[in-house]
Amino acid sequence: MQAQADALNSLDMARYARWLRRITGAEHELALCLPSGAAVWESAPERGLGASLQALCADGFEWPCIGDGLQRHDAGGDTLLYMAVKGRGMVIAYLAVRVPFAAQAPAEWDVLAETFEDIAAGIADEISSKVELDSMALELSERYEELHLVYAIDKQVQQLDPGADLFQKLLQSWAEHMDADVAAFVKPGEDLCVHATNLSAPIHNLDLVLVEMRGDLYRFTHSARAPIVINDVKDPRRAYIFTDLPFKLLCCPVIHDRSVVAILVLANHLAKPDFSNSDRKLGELLANQLSSLSRMYGMLSETRKFNEQMANALIEAVEAKDPYTRGHSERVHYISMEIGRAMNLGARDFEDLFWGSLLHDVGKIGIPDAVLCKPGRLTQDEYTFIMVHPERSYEILRHIDRLKGAVPGARHHQEKFDGTGYPHGLKGADIPLNARIIAVADTYDSITSSRAYRAGRSHEVAMAEIARVAGVQLDPAIVRVLEEVCALEPEWIARFNIQRTPVAA
Image (tube, rainbow, N blue to C red; front, side):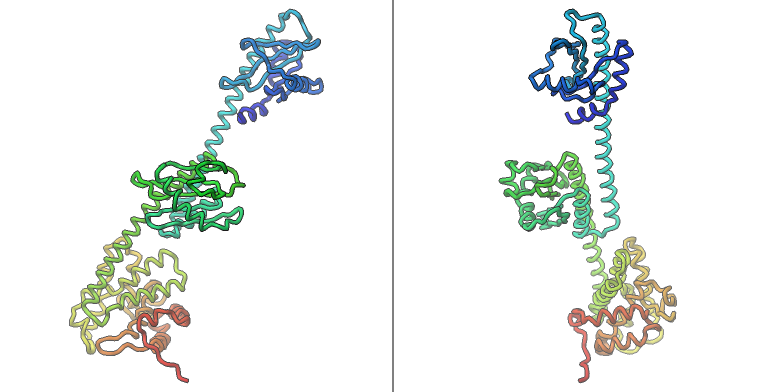
């Protein structure tokens, strides 16, 4: 056993030699050797006891023993006295001394035998302790590695947005952490196969490897419901699991409600080390984490779908009051998101802009139809009703915890950059960023959309008007972003049927 051999080499045998000398009162030529005769340690290498033992074993000497005590072997004018050192019932080494030949065992050999028994027991105990400590250290190292990986997973999950991209980034991290050439998450029920690579050498048929993972490997693991490790090139399972592809595999089932819903696969080139038992444990840990993440992703997707349906229902209720504004919320939302994307907003701000722009006019649901749908000029009182709608949006949305970050965008999208807007007369940077973005998108759509009292105007007219009010009504920095977005002739200009002013020849 390698652990015992390593422990033997770490023994302080000089201490045992001093123990032998103190008890027997004599200087003995002492050696500790393996059953093969190879010396682990000897007190006087220059006298050649170790070499003699190795030569003796090479000639066929097999350490014959009668009972468990001190044994003797006579050779020429010398006698070899030896005793087995046992660990867990197995001989792991021999203690040996070379003494002058004696036909009858002298009394001092009895003292030597008793001392050998004590030394052999001491060596066995020390080796057992060292092996146990090494095993504990290895176990602690593995547990630390697992805890480190769990910490890394949790940290990444907190920093990433849900979605297939989340799985891809986690797989990339795990491939690097476990030094795997390929890490894949396969969920055939959702036609999902996400993978990451950390290649030690090229894989020219990676598509075929991924197809095999989605096929027989998944079906076999689904039936086995247990991790699969394939290291040996001659493993018979290769013929019907992985079609003889030359890779080492670690495949762990991802279990949800006692059913295998997916698999986590790590694949390596044959030249890399075998997947170990520790790798298997880590693989199971990753599979458990993926099971939790998959459930979380599913619940978040369902929640997001529900939220979108509720938002669309609210928008439909608002737009049903005024057919001329139908599609306004969708267009303002889309253009706002284009601006936010061009500004590289962070994930949280982007999510708040998503909901704030989509629901910015939900407060209009409380405006009387006679005011909202009036084709002519509004009176001062009627316009006051219109001015109330951002605050009504706030009153409707503030009760939804999930939308708290989106409320400022909807509440303040009618503020003006110079402070003359409503509902609170905020100015400049005091106006929430998302509200300033929505204001630019809302102004653009208001100009380009048809109303009961006028037809929609062209893109060029809208951009000229927006440029004119930049710094007064709108944030000039965000106006510049819209100009940059529109300079690329985005497809939504045509999709929203926005008119274009022909360029003069």
